[in-house]
Amino acid sequence: MIQTDILIIGAGPTGLFTVFEAGLLKLKTHLIDALPQPGGQCAEIYPKKPIYDIPGFPEILAGDLIKNLLAQIESFKPGFTLGERAETLERLEDDTFIVTTNKGTQHHAPVVVIAGGLGSFEPRKPPIKGLEKYEDNGVAYIIRDPEKYRNQKVVIAGGGDSALDWTIELAKIASEVTLVHRRNEFRGALDSVEKVQALKNQGKVNLITPAEITDLHGEQQLTGVSIVKNGEALTYLETDHFIPLFGLSPKLGPLGNWGLEIEKNAIKVNNSYDYQTNIPGVYAIGDVNTYKGKLKLILSGFHEAAVMCQSAYQRIHPDKKYLMKYTTVSGVEGFDGSKKEAKKEIVQAIH
Image (cartoon, rainbow, N blue to C red):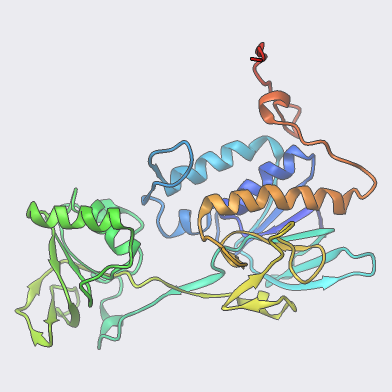
């Protein structure tokens, strides 16, 4: 049985940053993730997608963010159970927990933190006849490697951030990019909408709204699509790739059977204090949780991780009082004996 101070369900950005915050408190961590490598969606679904709202990084690829987080926590020596899904939660008489995976691996900890992002998920597929025939033969729901589309003709469908962002990115390398959306209005960030409109005005992107893809063409490999605009069929559009980006359908999976309070497929937490669930000792942070005013942003998950770890420390060490020190003063000392010293500076007070 694996023993740890804090057991983290989910090895995405929020789960990985939890390791850092726990490490500052000298708390050991272990992570469980159903994916075969750390990083969550950032590593599995869009490693090459740029992220613009990480403090200190005007732009960073999702995959690079994960690499940086892994480097940041390396000295804290977290444990990993990868390629296994957290299946059951058992509360013991001493108020500690045993979490067992679908492969029977048992983990014992006084604190369990659910940082599972959107949970398990699958792409939302458009209702187009014969769509499955072209999956991996021209149809994709996730862009893992943009280079695959260099000098190719690409049709993207959708009106959210992913559709807009990938239209902007692929316009840099594809020979032709067409964005199709069933409405004239987009759900994505205004800045992205303006960039797509500018690309259209420059002749670098074809923008067709309000319209929908109705048919796919090709013997084995996709060769073209049919588009209906304003209820009238458009001419056949030749393409090498069709990428419908309608978001993911999240599912909590086995976590939904743990007795947690659920609201709209998310876990309710106490955000006035420490992001604890209705089960004392079980916390939920990141996109998997919900509370009034919740923002599903990576930086929100980072904040929640820091607050949660302070509460977890008090639960694990009820007789100790931890005095928080800024890393600019205390430095960062890893479990391997390494230490990043804070720079000593003389600060002159101004009166």
